[in-house]
Length: 257
Image (cartoon, rainbow, N blue to C red):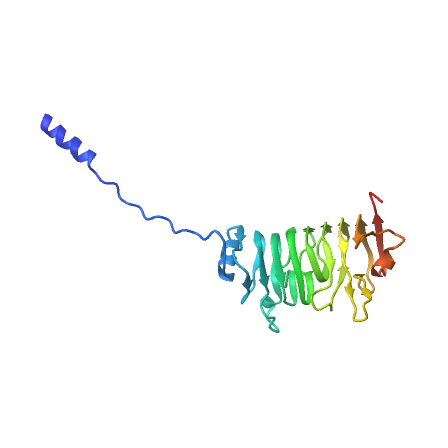
């Protein structure tokens, strides 16, 4: 009896556990467009290298941390909407990234409208063929927020409830062909700066606030905004900026002089 118990104890004590296969290691940061799109499906993606895209990057309800890397959009192809944007943002957060090139550098598109809030943080946009940012396919229920961004080129947007830009800088794109803000909805700019471009004769062409002809009733607020070192006021705004007001309201507010 004692011998049987001893043998049983020995057998139990020497039993080997079944080895398990380790889970495959997931990359901490994406280095290809394919990896980036797959990571975005999880809700958060980090970019680990500069990318020249061969396909669309779609941010929809996720966070893209660009890691201060540069993304250059795919070459636009006529009739292929997925090549229109450098980054297609249908909602979510894009931060710490430089985006260059393309027809719409950052924006939504047909079939991928911005139907949830869009937040741009520390994003540098070098407008390509036309737009720095361009949104126009949402359901009108979300909002656009931009903070600490540099938006060089033509920026326009609609189909949001509101747009709020905080501590952003607006300027011309690299070619100097585009440099204007065209809001289609109520917009507030707080602590923003506007930069003009130097013409061939050495004169400065001011950045533009350019409402669409026939637009009416849009309320644009500029609070503590500057051109260079000059504070924008209700009295000097048309001297410092090219302003096409149409039937809209431009209100300048300053909390300090």
